[in-house]
Structures are given as structure tokens and as C-alpha cells.
Length: 291
Image 1: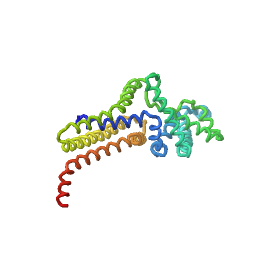
Image 2: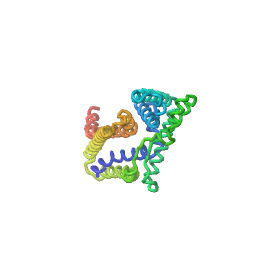
Image 3: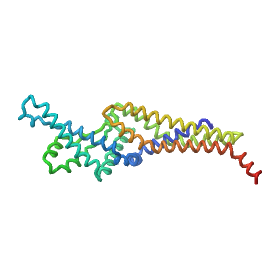
Image 4: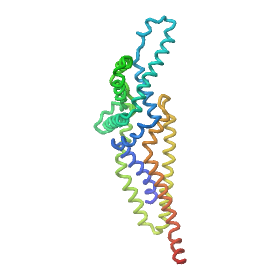
């Protein structure tokens, strides 16, 4: 029972974190809210929105008066200038005071869509996307009096700036893990507490058992910390080249920060319990003898 409890304790911590930080909309939004001021995340948003806008920019009409031989060079020149203009407008929005509220609204809508897709009654055929169109709408208003900017942004469709978070074929597989997490967060903590408490009550040498239980909990939590670091590294390494590694790392750290803190607190609590249980009674007897 003590061995099972020591193994279940870090798993219950991970399941509880996943339930209240990943599957609950308010917890998820609270976790990603500080990222609105992260420089790497801001740069990633600027790049994504600018790339999406530039995909709809057409300058063929501007090249009609240019000779065919000069058109490639003029096209590159105009494209670079337009990209710089769009990126500047987007950056002003992303670094503005209204962006944090916009950022939270975008993620709240995305998480509600994710929650609906992973629910038993949701549609498993629809992908989950992060819709950055509100950023474009804010840029539209910002350059409303600029003929060039307004003409460019009119070409962008209302739903044309999206980042796919979960593809439709992956929804059934993620849905199964979603249900396991929600149930595990309810069952694992009491199971771990019952195993540890029952084992300590039934064992004869309780001090020795407490030392072993504390050491086992600390070791299991340390293994979980190592696993989290390995998963983070491999996940970032497997990302496509178009995704910013610094932004993805900041995103992962924001979500897993409470879990990593809880894991190391569990390591410290387990080690402290083992040390106090091992040195407690002899040290207490020695102190009494000196007194």
C-alpha cells in the first residue's frame, strides 16, 4: 500500500493540475494571461498575423506600368515595404494597452471550443483554432484613415487569421485522454491518501515505514520532474520550423509552472518527512538525556 501510494501521489498531483489548469477555462485563461506581455509571444503574434495578411495582398495592378524585366525586383521591393508596414501596425496593437484583454478573449473562445469538441456531445470532426482575427480588426480601426492600410486589410477574410491548435483527426484521441484526466483528478488523490494512510496504520514498524514512504514519494516526484523536462525538450524539438521556439517554450512554462512547483514541493516534503522520521526519536532521546 505504501509503494502504491508513493506512486499515485505525483500522478494525482499531475491529474489535478491538468484538470484545473488545462480543462477548466478560467484556470487556462489565468495561466496564459501573463503571456500577453512576453516579448517572444508578442513577436510570434506579429509574425503570424503579418504572414496571414500578406497571403491576401495582391500588387499585380501596381506592376502593370513596370517593364517585365523589372517586375521581379519591383515586386520584392513593394512586398518588403508592405510587409514592414503591416508588421508595424500589428506591433502597435500587440504592444498596446488593450492587447491583454484581447489576448484573454481569444484564448477563452479557443478553450471553450476545445472543451466543446472534447466533450462527449461535441463534434469530433471540427478542428480547434486560435482565432487572431480580433488583432486584425483592431489594426483595421487603427489604420482606418490610411488608404493604403485600409485597402490591404479589406482583402483579408474575417476568418482568415487562425492558428490550428488541434486538427480534426486528432480530436478522438485527445478526447480519450481528456476523460481520463477528468476522472483521474477525482479518483487518484483520495486513492493515494488511503494507500499511504492505510499502509502507515497497518505496518508494525511505523518509523521505518514513514522513512520509506517519504523517500518513495520524493523519488517518484523527482522522476516526474525529470519526465516533464524531457517531454518539454522533445516537444519543442518536434515543432515545425514555422513555430517560434521561444514563444512555445514560454507557453509551455506558463502552463506547467504550477505543476513543476508542486512537484518540487512534494520532493522537499517527502525528503523532509524521511529525515525527520529517521532522526526524530533518537534526537529527541538525546535531547532529553542532555536536559
